Image 1 (tube, helix red, strand yellow):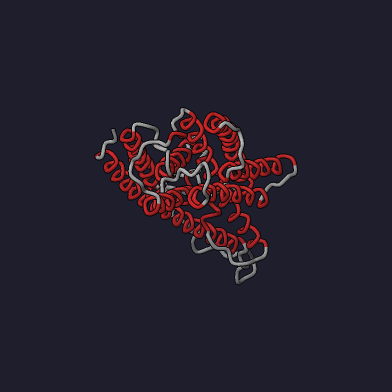
Image 2: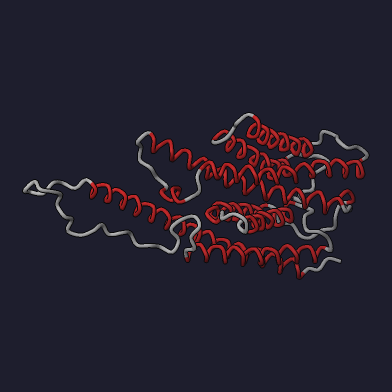
Length: 336
């Protein structure tokens, strides 16, 4: 028996979570803007110090002219770098945590109303998948300070939830026979976990490419924009973070592929049938396997590996947003 009230409450909570995520996005953006301002102040201070060190001789030629006043340091901000604790950054993380709790409540209510795990169609998978991306972002920050990714991660969540709310929402319906299996819990849950780690790796690789492009412009003597990038970890450090994050995602995606084959044998009597969804799941596995192999053995570090990371996550999004909706097959469970 499907409760008609809980889905409405779930929808209300997901809209509330989106509003909180939007506020967190603004706070993260303000933090990045503040980083850029502080970076410009430090650059001006270095330039002023360099000029002052080249002191001209005094009028009588007996020595350097004393400065009228020492150079004035820029205002010390609470968050002067990637490990600082600025007010905007703390507010952004608190709002992200609050949005996560509201988001979690929406997913739980949807599952309770349906009497099953809430990832049987595109709307439910969108809710659960974006929840896990936020959860991975929050958990990773317990180990490494990646709060500077908040603008990009939360921005991605807002886009995905906005599209899902407009295009993918469907009422709660019973599961099709092929999905009435405990493999639904294992297969889809691990796939969404893998997507969460791939999303964080995607964001890190995107920042890495921006840093490398900025370094090239500096070497060429061109005007440098996005000053906040100078306050972030180095491109090589981000490359290593993306690599470790994508390794976790790849392991989970490997289990997704294996579990899907076992489930297919239970449901349809064959492990592999070249269904469109199966093919794209394998393509994603090959892309990330190529990324890990190229980086580990062929020395594809820097922009090469970053682009492979971006291509891999683009394939994940294509599999989710295009294959699930526009390609027909045994895996057509979008609910649309």
